[in-house]
Structures are given as C-alpha cells and as structure tokens.
Length: 357
Image (cartoon, rainbow, N blue to C red; front, side, top):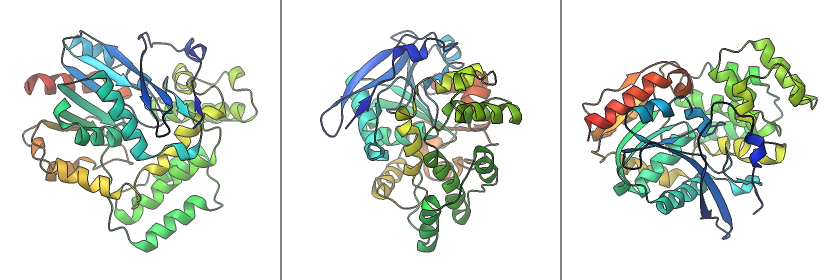
C-alpha cells in the first residue's frame, strides 16, 4: 500500500483553524503505519464529545462549533478520517472500503483510550462512527447523529441493482451543476434514491481532480453560481492558485489535497455507501440488531432541508429504545448543518450531554 502524507505547508494559509495537531499511528492490513490526525480541545477532565466529519470535508467542518462546545464544558475530539484532512491518504482505490475505515478508526479509538464518550457524526462520520459504537459499546455513553444513518437495503430489486451499477460504469458525463440538480430531487424512496445517489458516486469517481473546496463550499456557503463556475474553470486549466474566485472556505477544504494523487479517498469512498447490497450487508444487519436494543440516550438532530438525508431519523425513532424522550429536532442548515447552524447545534449537544449525565 502506498501512503501519502499532506505536507504541513499545505495548511499554513488555512484561516480560523488554530488547533494544535494530535497524531495516532494505526496499522493497515499489510502492517504499514497509517497516521490519523485529530483535534483535542477543552479541559482534559471534561465530558468528551467525539465529532466526526463527512464527505468531502475534514475536521475543519467543526471549527465554528468547537469554541461553543468547549465553552459549554465539553472536551472536543474531532478526527480526520484516513484519506481526508491532516490524516494520511492511501493512494489506491482498492485501499479504501467502508470496513477498512471502521477498522482504522477502531484502532485509533483504542489507542487513545477514550471513554465515557458522547458521539456526534454526520454523513460518512455517522456511517463509520455508528459502526465504531457497535464494536466498542462500553466506550460510549450517548449517541447523537445528524444527516446520516446506517444504510441497510437487503431487498433492493436486482433490476435496480443492475441499473445502478450500469449507470456508475456508463458513459454519462456529469458536471457539478447537473449532479446537484439530480440530488436536489431525491425523495429517499427505494426505487429513487439509489439511482439518484449514483449520480453523486459517478461524479466523484469520474473527476480525478475532484475539488473538495468547490464542492464543499458550494454546499456550505451562499455562493454565486458564476463564481463557482469560474473557480472550476481556473482549476481545469491549471491556474487554481491564481484564481480570484475562491473563498477562504473553499481554500481550507482544498488544503489537504496538494495534487490529484492525494484525492483517492474523496473519490473512492462515495462508492462504498451501501445504497444497494454490497459486501457491508451483514455488518450493517448486525449493527441494526445492536441498535434495536440500544437503551443509552440517542438524539437525532437533522437539517430537515437536506434532500439527500431528509427523513434519516425515522428508522431510528421507530427502532431504537434510547431515542425515547429525547428532544429530537430539525434545525435547518442543509447537509453540513455543523457549519450553517454551529451555535444552535452546539447548544443542543451540550444540553443533551448535561441532561443525560
């Protein structure tokens, strides 16, 4: 396995990220060292909240929340998944899978010996983190999730499975705007979401120089479409550093990827979201069996205006005993509610911890 490490100088101009780095070495399947980065802010004896990011961002997503959470009396741990942020980046597509992310992060959790943890995860952070809870139940006291879940779709018709796979490998060319238009119409019905989500999977894989900065900032900021298009154009002609159309946020989200070689994780991981049955099916089944008996406090805080994850909370509220009596809420903010609703979300999480001590 070839492993890349983003040079520290790539982050030197990132604004509003004053946090000291912390690093943990875990082992890959072929016994190589893989370095995982995390933020650790707040008093060492304060209750821990583990905040895990999604695709295609990194722990920078929590930079607005961390001061509120610390002020509320919590110790914030915010890691970067392998392939993202300041963590190491395996260089080949075959190096990435859902299970490997879980395995790597389980090692990270065990090495740091975090206990009495409150979990919060969004997007991929939820998919990975929820499986970590299944594997390490004694380390977690509370669970909160936003715009995420544990996809488990054993009954997807074979015809739809074939259609999704054919589309992923087919000749259709997508740009950022055509892809987002399809995703905006997702309704989370079984026969709709898998094929529409395949547009996201295809777009990310078919773009070797996938811009995490443009993609993430266009979802997190109220950016002008013309400005986004011009930033993409400058990237395409190799003049991204000279572009006047980027924002501080887009530059921060792009910082982990000094060249296309570093982008395999953000390109490959969307294909491992189990929107159709895949190698994760049995593990997802076991995870749901675990959570159907989970009685510790469990909070769902979503946006309610994110077409990709709208309604994510329904199976949790129906099946998980620990959700009973908790103040579940939709607070707006789109897919990355941690950015758009930082203060509101932080206050909800602080109250959730204090109320359930």
